[in-house]
Amino acid sequence: MANIPITVALSDYDHFRDVFTGKVRAEGLDITHIDLPVEEIFSRFTRFREWDVSEMSFARYVSLRSQGNDTLIALPVFPSRFFRQHAIYVATDRPLDNPRQLIGKKVGTAAWVQTAQVWVRAWLTHQCQIDPTSIDWYQSGVNVAGHKDEVQAILPKGTRFTHVPDKSLTELLYEGKIDALISARPPRVFEDGDPRMRRMFKDFLAEEERYFK
Image (cartoon, rainbow, N blue to C red; front, side, top):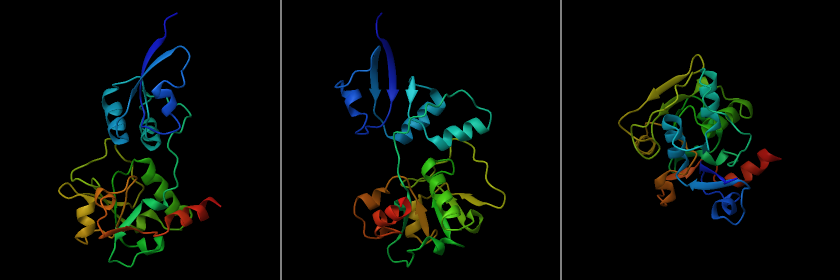
C-alpha cells in the first residue's frame, strides 16, 4: 500500500525535529510538516482546519468542548511543557517582585483562553492564595493592539475584565495603565533588550525549581 499523506502543523521543537527532517520515519505516512508560530497554528486551525493534525492550545480545546464544539479530537501528546513563573513581566522602575503584590492591581493578559494564562492564574490561585477576582484584568495583544480571544471566554462570577482595542499590553505597561502583564512568549521589547521591562522574578529559574520540588 502507498503511504498515507498527512499534513502536520507543529512548532519546531527539538524532540520532534528528527521526524520532520526525515531522519526518523513514521511507518506508513508521508508527513508534510508545517512550521508556523503557535499563535498562527492555533488561530488558523480553529477557524479553517487547514491541515490534518495540529498542535493546539489545551485551554482552547477544553473551552471549545465545554461549549459543545466536539469537532476536534485531542491526542494525549504534549509537545510544549513549561512552568510559567517566568511569564509575569513588570516595568523595571516598579517595586513588584512578589505575586501577592498583584492583589488589587491591574494585570494584562493576552487571552483568557490560553494555556499559559490559565496556568499562571491557577498558580496564583492555588499556590499564592490570590483570588483572580481581586485583580483587574486587561486584555489586548502583547506587542500589538486589537487582539481578541477567538474562543469566547466564560468568566468566573465577579471577574473584572476589560478589552483594550487601541493599545498593546506593552504600551499599557509603559504608560502605567497596568502594573504587570502575563505573556507566554517574552514581549518583543524584552527580547530586544529594552531595559524598561523585566520579569517579576529576576531569578525565575530558581523560583520554578522551587515550585518543581
